[in-house]
Length: 332
Image (cartoon, rainbow, N blue to C red; front, side, top):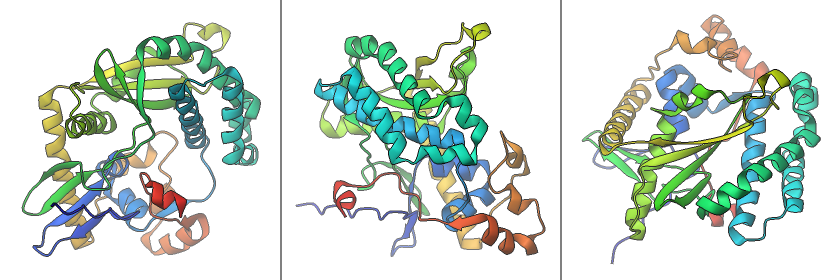
C-alpha cells in the first residue's frame, strides 16, 4: 500500500531532501516574478513584504474572480438567476471592502462606478455569457486547486525536483476537450490581446495540469488549450463601440511546447536554488518601470543603506502567498 504524499505547507517554497536534492513547489506567479526580476522575487517570496495600500486593477480582478466563482457554482448546479448575479456581485464587493478604494484611488473608483458599476458589469456578463455557456460548456470544477499533494511533477535533475501548483478558475469540457478557463480583466479589449497569452507561463501550466488531471482520472479527453475569458473594466465609449466588453479565445499548445515549458520550469528552479544558497538575486533594471512601475521601485531607487527604513515606513510584512487552501485548512 503506497504512502499518502505529505501536503505542501502554506507558503512552502522548497524542501531540502536528505539526499541533497531540493524539492520546489512553484506556480506561475512565483515563476513570473523570478524570471522578471530575481530581486523582486526575493522581496516578494523570500522576505514576504508588500507595499501598503491597494492597487485598483488587482482589487477589481480579485473581486471579479470571486464573483464568477459564485456565478459558475450556481450555473453548474442549474440554479443561476439574474437575481443571483446581482447578489453575487454585491456580496463579493462588500466582502472585499471594495468601497475603501474610493479613498485610495478615487478617480479609478469613480470611473468604474463603484458597487453600481460592479453590478452592471456582472449583469452584462450574464446576458453575454449565458447562451455561450449553455451551448458549449460542461463545467467540471470551479476554483479547485491541485499540486499541493505533489501530484504535478514537472521534472527533476540531481539538484532539484520541480512540482507545480495551479488553481484554474474553471475546468470545462468544450467540444470534447478538457479546457481550463482563466478569467482576466483589462481596461479595454483590443484585437491584439490574444498575443499577450502565447507563450504564457500561466496558460502553459494550466494545460500541463489539465493533461495530468485527465490522466489521473482516466478521462478519455485531450487537453491542449486554455481559454482566456476576458472582461473589460471600462465600458467602451461611443467612439470605441467596436470594442466589446467581453471576449473569449483559446490558447493552444503542442506536445513539444509543453515539453519545452517543463524544461524551462526545472531550469528556473535550479537557478532559484543557486540564488537562495548564495544569497545572490540578480536585479533587472528593465522591470522597474513596466506599466505604472514595480511596487518595489521605491526601495531599489534609493541607496541600499536606506532600504530598511523605506521598507519599515512604506511596506508591510505579509503572510506567505498560498495558491489555494484545502477544505480542512479553510475550516480552520
